[in-house]
Amino acid sequence: MNMRSEIPEANKLRGRTSRPPASGKKYKVRKIVRGIASGEALICPESFSFLGDVDLETGEIIAPSNPNKGKTLKGKILVFKESKGSSGGCVVLMTLVKKKVAPAALVTIKAPDYNLTEGAILSKIPFVSDLSPKFISQIPTGTYIRVDADKGIISYTPLRFASGTPE
Amino acid sequence: MKLTDSEKRMRNGAEGRVIAEAMDYIIQFGEAFNAPRLVDISYCHYPAEMGIYYGDIEDLVRYAKRGAKVCVPTTTSTLCADLEKPSITGIPAKLARLQAEVEPAHRSMGILETYTCTPQLLGFVPPFGSYIASVESSAIIYFNSVLGARTNRGGLFTRFSAVTGKYPLMGYLLPENRYGTHLFKVMIPPERLRTYDAWCALGFIIGKIVGSEVPVVQLPMTKSQTPILPRSDFMIGLGAALATSGSVTLFHIPSVTPEARTVKEAFKNGNVPKNAYEIREKDLDDVYQQVNNIEPGADIDFVTLGCPHYNLAQIEYVARKLEGRRVRKDIRFWICTNRMTRKQAEYSGYVRTIESAGAKVVADTCPVESHMRQSTCREYGLAVPNVRNMVTDSVKMVRYVKDLIGCNTALADTDRCIQSALKGRYDSLQRRKGH
Image (cartoon, rainbow over all chains, first blue to last red; front, side, top):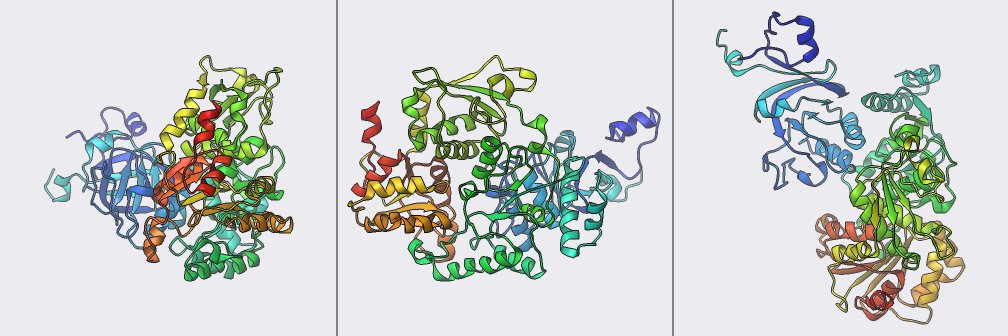
């Protein structure tokens, strides 16, 4: 397994002979809303609209085109390409929080929109953007990941470490 | 982000917890988008809390009880009820009572109870270049484009701007983001652009192409080779449509809007795009084909005018057309406006004329924002859909009632809407005959 850091700057600093980080893979991201959260990743490779794609009562994804249709956002790290539809996201996110079915963190590849950012700040949901698109192809839904918005890092421990298998 | 000493004091609690919290939110918001600093705003158009959104009004009442006060003139956007005359919209009394709780809360915060999507009609016309914080896509685009004030598409954070008077310097507040991106040449004969719905259809075409960018719209010349100069209600209809099919926040019309006296001036460094989109009469016809799913002559049960809210002259026009006539039985015909304009229309006798004909002048709300939404009808045990076939002169109304109310729609000019209400069926003859 290639254990090199996904952080290009870090690789440059370390040089080619540097040791990989021991704790697992790391992805550099940009902080949008502060906070730290961990949970199962819910990977939505396409754009996501909070208004219309999710059931307000259950937090379940209802968009027929979404590969995760039927899964709930509750407690998940929602990873998506970008938010679609520029209004309504804020109110929907806050409603999900009131109903206790909100995601634990938001992660996007593209730049965030104002409306969803407002919702995340008010709901105190950590939110990061500028994630490498590679993440979506490398990390399957259900992987346990950790988002540290303050440090701008997403990390996860590959299964062989998590299960205690010696290196 | 760079903060002034007074901003730091506000954030650190020198003016109380409400201000400290609001400043923290606004600073976080600005930092998320790399805003270098905050600016002072001179006006807010605020999203009135709605009875149809879960917990919205309770949240406002709690906030007002904390002693929050706005520090800039702040108007409010639409509600789900006509609070002065709740029964005229057929809203469940319980929902109307819940909605009415916003008034004392807003008053205690110093927020003005305008409850309209067109605050510019009430004299809230921020000067050129001023920073403001606004919600309501049709008002935002008017403030930015027609008046040259500067605002982004605001959301709930408008509340924090209203209490602090601050907004991050970002997005459309920055001159470099206000240049045109696409050029549209309107090749439609000027006589076709004499009705409100035509401007809506024009905006609908352009918004679809331009998405969230900045269109520059070159209007056709009149026979005497002078540019056509649209009426203010046409500009409202155009802007509302641009923000419906796209999420346009700013447009320019050379020789009409203040930031683009010429086509060249609308683009950065005068770099006019080589390729312009040409909009022809056929494109306008296509919009009606796309959005209308009521056959000409078919029975209708609802006619809406006033999206965005009509001005006094538009109400006077409808009153004149309805004088001595009678709307077909069982047709609901709403002319939507703000409460101050309705007061004037009552004073001038227009409301009496309209009501005598069997139509209603509705304030504070409109079909899209009302209890007639499918989700609200279900919650309150009302028939779904509440409306079967609606005729309207607004493409924004068409677009949103389709999904939110679940009815069929037809876009028609204002005269045809009125005729449809009188006949009880969708009257589409004039457009075909005229052209």
